[in-house]
Image 1 (tube, rainbow, N blue to C red):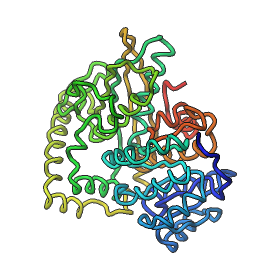
Image 2: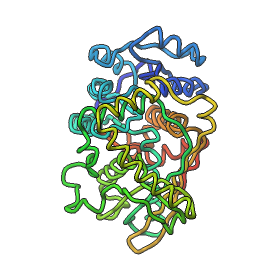
Image 3: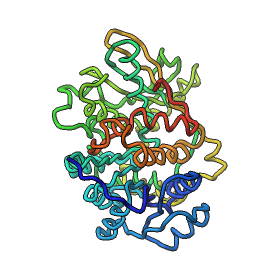
Length: 407
C-alpha cells in the first residue's frame, strides 16, 4: 500500500522554470488566483529570481537544484506534492529528477516526446511508483495529450453510446505554430545517442506480453493518401512516431477497457482538398523521409542545429498568440459504429497549448486526486489518459479548449 504523503510546503514545483516553455508555465501559475502553493526551480538562483519578477510571481518560492545533483533533487522532491518539469532534453536532465520523485512519493509530469527515455523510466520506476501510488506521467504537452486523450475519449464514447469496443481510431492534425529550441535539442539528442531503432518500434512503450504477433499493420505511415472520413488529403504526421506509442501504452494499461483486442491507432497531418493538397501531401511525405535521413548524418545535423532556435529561445509572443491546433478523430466500433471526436485550441501548439496541457495536468494531481482514474492509490509510469482521463478533459474545457466527445 502507498504511504500517506506528509504535509509539504508546496503543492507544485515548476522545474526548468527559466527555459522557454518553463517561463510560460510560471506565467500560467501566476494567473491562478487563490490557487496552489508553488515554487520555481532550476540550477540558477539568479535566473529563477529574474523569471519570478518578470512574470509577477512574487508568491512563488525558489528552489535551486541542478539536474545532476541527486541530493538537491531529493530535497526538492521532499518539499512538494507534484513536480512539473519542462527541462529538456529529458534524457540529459530528467532521470535523476524522476528517481527522486519516486523515492519521495512525489507525483511528476513533463512535456517530453523522447520515447526511448520514457522507456527507460518505465523499466526503472514503473513497479516502484505503482507500489507507492505515485503517478509519473511523461508526455503531458502537445505530445501527447490530444492524441492520447482524444483516442481514449472516442473509445469511451463508442462503449457508452453504442455498447461497442473500439476497433480503431485515426487522428488528423491541423496546426499553426513554431519551434522552440528545447524541442529541437531533444530531437538532436535522441539522434546523437543512436536510438533510431528504438524510435522506429511502434510498441516501444508497451508492457511485456502486450505486443501483437504481427506488428506490421501498426507501422508508421510514410505515404500520402486521400481519406474519405476526413474528406482531405493526408500525409504522415511528424509527431506520429511519438504519439502513437503513447496511445498504444494507454490501451495496454487499460485492462478491461473500451478497446478491442486488435485495436489499431494511426495519425496524420491534414493538407486539404484538391490537386494542390495532393501535391503538398506528397511533397511533405518525401521531404519528411529526406529530412530524417539528413538528420541522421552528423554534419547536416550540426548545420540544422546551428540554424534552429537555441535552447531557451522560441517564437515571439505575437506568433504564439496567432497559432492554433485541431485534432480530429474517427473511431470505429467492433460492429461498425462510427464515433467522431475533436480536441482543439488557440495558441501555438508546441508552446501555448503545451503550457495549458502540462499545467492543468499538474493541477489535477495537486487538487483532484480522489477523482482521478484508479483513485488516490493508483500509480506507475502512466500516460495522460490513464493518469487523468475525464478529469483533465474537464480542466481543459474550463481553460478554453474544445474537447469532444469526452462528456
